[in-house]
Length: 201
Figure 1 (cartoon, helix red, strand yellow):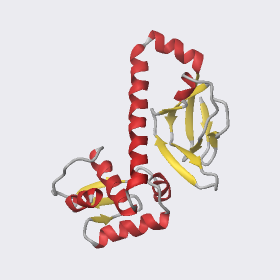
Figure 2: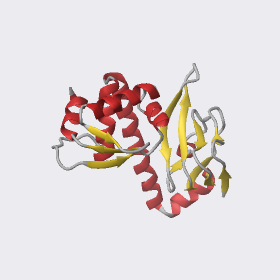
Figure 3: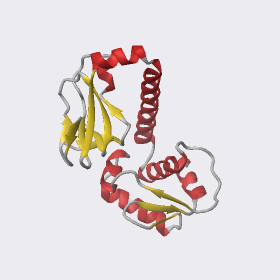
Figure 4: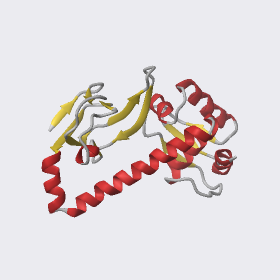
């Protein structure tokens, strides 16, 4: 078990990869850096989540960074050991494939979001996914409280906008009566129908 303090990195782009890492306790963020040094958040990992799975299939250098958002305990398994485990327990292999498929789907959604949606639509689409898991026809109903799974700085990076733009969009949604911000990461969705219409206009 490896302990990583908040702000420390587990690995960086360019490092070789021959392990899969499982988060035991804590929280990690996976991100990339553009040529200009701008951070693009890829995902947040919680206990039970894993990273480095591509090392199972190819000997390639890593293209992203893994940084602890709080003190985190990581279990590292060498790919040769993991292959033996997967052969002995196929259910684990299926779980890894399921997670990789989900991540591929999320990546495709992100690409579509960046290429076809402005900041307001991105914000609306994200709120819908946060509540329902995926965009789908919704009707307005009772208010729904949601908690952002990451800081607003990381959320802005994740959906491809500046933190200032994110704050302006949330304030705009609140002024229109669509949401109410009740804390640093807590929101109450008041008018899901209007948010849905904004996401598909």
